[in-house]
Amino acid sequence: MQDEIVSDIEAFEATFQRLIEARDLRVACWAGSRTVLGYGTRAPSAEGERQVAWVAASGAATLHSFCIYHRAYHADFPPPYNVALVALAEGPHLVSTVIAAPVELRVGMALTAAFEPSGRLVFHPRNAGAVQ
Amino acid sequence: MAIRISPRPGYALAAIVGLGFSAISRKPIGSARALAATAVRAAIDDAGLRLGDMDGLLLNPSSLAAEDALPLKLQEDIGLRDLHLLAIIDAKGSAVVQMVQQATMAIGAGLAQCVACVFADTPVVPQRGAGDTFAITSPITGIAGWERQYGLFGATGAYALAARRHMALHGWSGDDLGAYVLACRRWAALHPAAALRAPLTMEQYRAAPWVVEPFRLLDCAYPMNGAAAVVVTDAARAADAQPKPVYVHGMGQGHPGGHPCRPVAGDGADPGSGGALAAEGAYRMAGIGPADVTLCELYDSFSFTALLALEEYGFCGPGEAARFVADGHTAPGGRLPLNTGGGHLAGGYLQGMTPLAEAVVQGRGAGGARQVPQPDAILVNGSGGWLEHHAALVLSPHRGLN
Image 1 (tube, chains in turn orange, purple):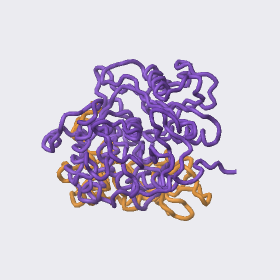
Image 2 (image 1 turned 45 degrees about the vertical axis):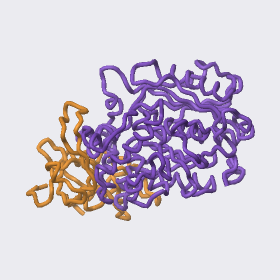
Image 3 (image 1 turned 180 degrees about the horizontal axis):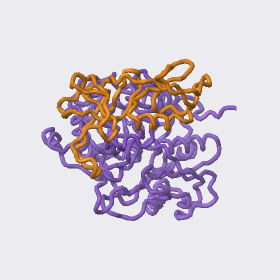
Image 4 (image 1 turned 90 degrees about the vertical axis):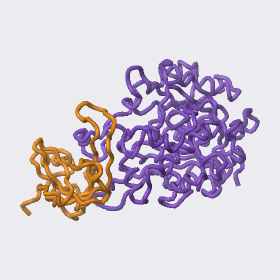
């Protein structure tokens, strides 16, 4: 498939980072069994699989959980701001943020992935006109 | 041949016979190393033992402390010689309980006979909020450095994510966390050495500032500088000990992997914390179940941590802990006393030594105004990381539990 990149498990993190830098959100799965992998995967499967296929993510997601920082821990992050744990439609979870007011946030709400001009991956409430 | 740690379920092999503290303060009172030495000596004195009786030393520095804050050289500071057991235990908030487990196993295996276990930390420093000490980024996603770009600083954020999801799934409100905080204050009011003893109303709780929502400042552990130590020895030797020994009947650990609401695999259900796994092991070894537990001393890094533990250690069904606490069952006079010294929120945060020390005090019957009438089966736990590391003990003032 043209939209896949296959790499060894040893290159998992570097591959993910390279894709993100190219503003390309993908999910990983074992190239043979097609079992979807979490972003924390770092070792061959129990069956010995180590070839990873990186498949284009749909960008559809749900808000698995979120929290709102009211205390300043770093000058780069003036409160309030939200940190979200997002479940991609394909399965993997990752930390991100939702571009929305705190009162709009609900666990389970539908989200859509987008890249900011800086290249940071964020999520918008679905039906909010976001584009990937 | 497998080592049998307990001769039979409900009959202990080891006991805690000494408990000692350094000074404990929100002000600078010396290095963790110096405080630890003081606490160990105090625990040995409390046990009626001499330095020469000791043959084991286990150390637990905070996982966020500077390297070598609590080195193996502490042995020499204390003046201990010819040890058969010496190690630093690193298992986040489960480490204090794990030290007692390691000591018990070493005693059971014949490796050592009298083991001191000490925790020390100095997170409160001048010109800096104690929260800053704990403000590391939490790598939940699994990609190095990923969380930094979103400002996920401190354990507070990682725990807030777990709390928010649990609260949403079970319809909890902020007041449900507050009910636990108020219960802890009621216990702390009965404890002369507790850090925060002033009575607290729900209105005052609601007025406390947010730190990381859904956690207010009063939902967070209250950091202290200080050290505490216990001495563990074999049960036969402990039988005639004064003060009264507190026996180790059950031990369990749980490490499911990953954040409690981030599946480790690509998909699947929330893995939960390690509580249920740890509970299973501790209860099985002790030969009891949660219905037999008469007192709980649970690690409460945050209010939510203890509420979740009530469910995962089998005292409530999923989502039922909020109602259980709000109905007063864990407060003074309740049917399941919980964190009777005020816990980490009101008693002071010594990362697992707070609940363990209180369990020893209660097991001895030395709790004064806060003493519970039947500390017969005491569950103590420690949890850390992002709740994915749990360790638990079943303790009792009785050598035979069943």
